[in-house]
Each structure stands twice: as C-alpha cells, then as structure tokens.
Figure 1 (cartoon, one colour):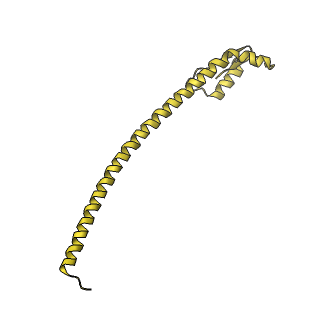
Figure 2 (cartoon, rainbow, N blue to C red; figure 1 turned 45 degrees about the vertical axis):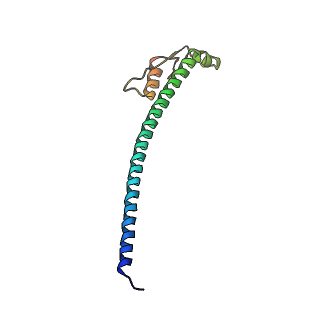
Figure 3 (tube, rainbow, N blue to C red; figure 1 turned 45 degrees about the horizontal axis):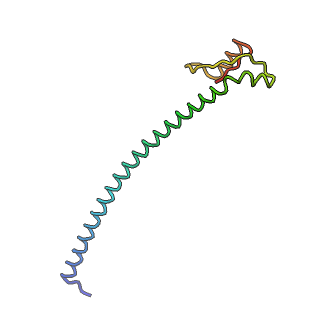
Length: 116
C-alpha cells in the first residue's frame, strides 16, 4: 500500500482534531480540579467547625455531669462507707497536675474529696 498526499493530509487532519479534543479535555479536567479543590477547602472548614462544636458539646456535657454529681457525691460515698465530709472543686490552673493536686489534698486536708 502506498501513501498518497491525500492520506497524509487526512492523517494530519485527524491528528489536529485529536489534539483539539485533548486540549478540550485538559481544560475540562483543570476546571473540575479547581472545583474539587474548592469543595475540599469547604469540607475542611465544615470539619473544623463540627470538631469545634463537638469539643464544646463535650465540655458542656462534662459541666452538666459535674453539676449533677457534685451535690450528691458526699452522700454517695458515705452510703458506701467512705468517710467523706465535703467535696472540693479545683479550678484549672497552670503548673499543677492532677497528681500534684491529689498529693496536695492528702497533705493539706484530710477527709476532703476532690471532684474534678
């Protein structure tokens, strides 16, 4: 089979059309990637917002439980034979770990139960 000038022209025409289609596909892909990046950023913002809300909810739940337990804690321990006369709430403060609080409590006041 011999290749004629018309065959070469046809091949070049098909090649040019394929190149155009490739360029079009690349532009569409680029646009889709930009939209995906935008959606990812929005999703990240939503995840951060939800994480913050869950953290706040957890804090509020902890405060609620403390509020519910604190009034009854002395009575509950006394009912179980543990000699407790009052409870104490330590506010969060820098430099004092939970272990240090317990040691301080043991040395400072006997029969006081920390409710943290």
